[in-house]
Length: 362
Ligand SMILES: Cc1ncc(COP(=O)(O)O)c(C=O)c1O
Image (cartoon, rainbow, N blue to C red; front, side, top):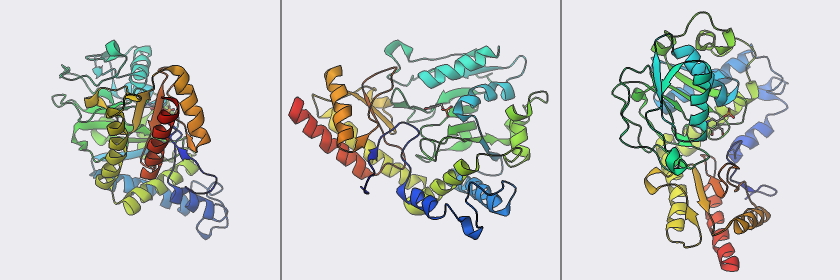
């Protein structure tokens, strides 16, 4: 661990790769010899064109996207996508399926309903406080899309495999597992992700949309809520969040060039998660909360024998240089978010701390 830095297990905004932070620091005052900071350059400059084009190119390479796809950067976080998706894709007489796997899916459903769109919820894991991913779902084959949340940041569950919808395109909120593993994009019509967990800072949402979905976008909606506005202008219709996009570009470069791509990223991520889950499985003191077949590789949720111990655990962990371990206020308990940038050493340090804590208090 570098001086003054803790191991950061925050759920988002979250840890960023140290080499990325160092590169930002190094070039902060004079970006690429321009004599300006990257946050001072014009979004109409050649320098910024290079940044955004490289971020798009890296996204395309990492996810093996062909020309059928458009890569967009949009402000408003993933939450704005909850309304943009139905506004852009669901016309009169259209319907969509939404699987409810917890807080963020529930919000996406609520937003579509506020807009009076016709949507159906073919499956939900609410009956057991969202501790699992529903299986054997009967999807509507007439739906325009099926919405899922690929990783449930708060509940600590994840779709290990994507469901078979009978050819209906999946629309997926991948805010907390984008670029964490390779994926077959053939099943998808649109993927979106707030950057602030796996690929950058808050302030920008990566939206990857299949071009034929753009044909569904109605003409009479406000420019800033319309995918075609962003698609027509390479996400430069108005002033983009340049610093956030620049950081995303650097994180994607780190995934490609330092880690070696998504297959390798996946191996590292699985190793980190396995260390924690194996540890819980052998413990009578720590207990994972998600069903074994639905466990998230990104957000590991767990409980201790009682709430007082959990408060002590989070406090003492921070004093030992391990931050961000408190569970979401809606579920309590503890959570270790171990996104792409979290090094394996952080997980090892956490397990060492857990063993010591159990010895002292258990
Ligand atoms: C899966 C998921 N979707 C959506 C959001 C909301 O993202 P934003 O804050 O960018 O709107 C989050 C935030 O934690 C999330 O984890």
